[in-house]
Image 1 (spheres, rainbow, N blue to C red):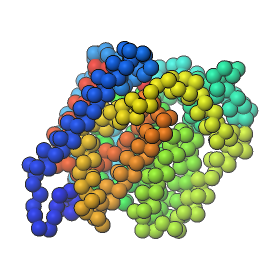
Image 2 (tube, rainbow, N blue to C red):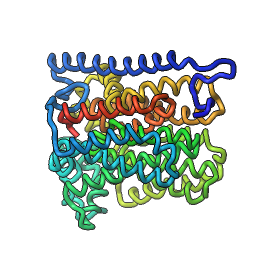
Image 3 (cartoon, rainbow, N blue to C red):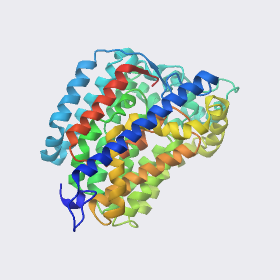
Length: 454
């Protein structure tokens, strides 16, 4: 790694490796203490008045040590990536590296999900009473259902939608409706879809980092994107699929603003951004990450008309079919207050949500974020600075979601699309194998000690 990529590199002094490592460890320890504090305070609050609505604060989970058929595979994948990941990431040709990241990410996510067994880990996850597959039969006439969609968002309305259907624009549910129509119905296919597509999110992030910052940095980040602790939840919810759509929207925008076929990549990026905001209301905050991409791009103006033209396609189609995004969102705010969201105390969740992210991104990312701050302050104009801007854009988006008050609890799942963009900060770390091992151990402990709610 060249000196311009090191956070503390200065022309007049060599970096103090020991000092930097201590500071990294302090950052990781602070993150661990934040989670421990959230667990202690949350347990006390839940025992006192039960207003958190989670059994193992701050996570939606239950204590339940267990092993399963995925245990040996998960350990084997972790050992292989820790031992060989950094070397292969540095040496493989770029396209082979992307395929390797996808394959290893699939193996990691599937094996973690299978720790809970095939049925609980994959096949039944999207069939519970809150989930999308509960309402497939109500979409026989899609235009009619879309016209009537907002009439069933609020609790108390006839046949009100289950929580996840009411809480998302209908493109989320329509994904599983269309899978059912092409013969891939049921929870098993839905789970496989989410894991397989979700694993490509890492590729979109790597393409973005390589395009806007530096290929060497992308290669250093690659093993950390494979062993993301957040894979515990990516294999159990549709949010991994949402994360992939959003990641590719950003990647295509990065290609467009750096002059790679700006018309077609801009148009494709706009289409995916339009789909993104019709998969999840909260993903409108990807506008912050998009702004960071535009700031870093060398050709910001020429792709914009094509990106905007692509963006309006999905909203125009849904509006023409009778679904009005803003109307639905206004009703969702009311529905949110009708349920647990209206009772959960924001004074706790505004910081406990961040504690949840410690388990999603891992202690290595906490250390990487410390180095990111140093890079942004000291290394303007370098590839490291550009990566730092991208990571900080994701962090700002995540903090905006936190302050909105519309994400109280369950953010280990809900914020996956934002959290994955923090992982490239690990490219700044030295001694990657030790940090990768820490990431893997954390994910294995969470998955084997807790029965997660998603």
